[in-house]
Image (tube, rainbow, N blue to C red; front, side, top):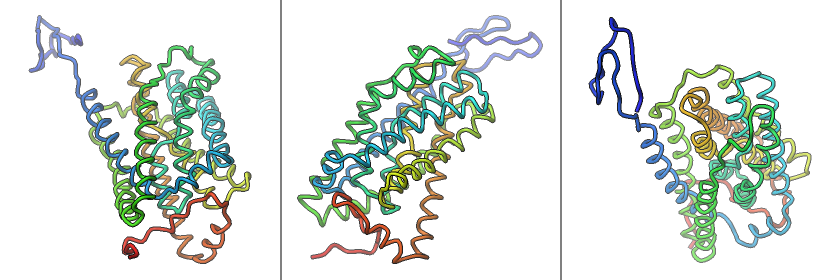
Length: 350
């Protein structure tokens, strides 16, 4: 219950007040954000699970398992995810001299595992789907230990890391909604390859629409405070860009194929912003949330915009260079999955 008061000359009792006495009244708590968050989270989880099932239809178990047995690409992704991103968040927080609470939310974002949106974008840029899905799975699993460790190391300057609540149940749910649908998709691809290809195409389109829809719904309907420090807007723009660029450069330095370089870049830049939002809401008071509440959404919006620019740039490059791209991507390991591009008019072979 919130206590509101004003001067006698300006006071006006709201219609939904439960008790009014002179110049003060009691209002029922506003559960709009809580209800909306629950509905959106449940709906998004179900839809993402369906999208991950469709993307699993692009994966062959032998090649997927090859990334687990010889995890060079996963190791590079791990270094980017839990090495580069937390350090980048720490440096950005220091460079912009933000409020301690704002510094913490930046670091929480940097310590989150990769999001499932990277898997959809990896398909659209002809990435290595086996690597993309194995990286997302492993980073979510590693997050159970790496998130507390990274937050312990980097938040000491501003706050006691024990004050930050890690929602292990949310991480577990993310892992289940990733692994189970992908596993079913892999089985479907093995058992019914023709039908799996159709499911893959439908799911990739649905996934792209879903990513944009989530950002729009969050930006338009969510009643968070948009009057936050302009520094957070700048950080929210720079941070994902650093992830994309550094992830790509490290993959190049690790001598990965161009297909895998694109995949690692997307996996590094696109964080699990939904998990970040959950941690923020569990760890801070309503007063503190006013300073930081919308940062995960800001990051989400700009990571999607940058990823779309990445996709447009790749498609232009692919159209101009044509065969050169095919030759570059042909240099691959025996365990790399090729999704052969996206052709909406292609029909299954009889």
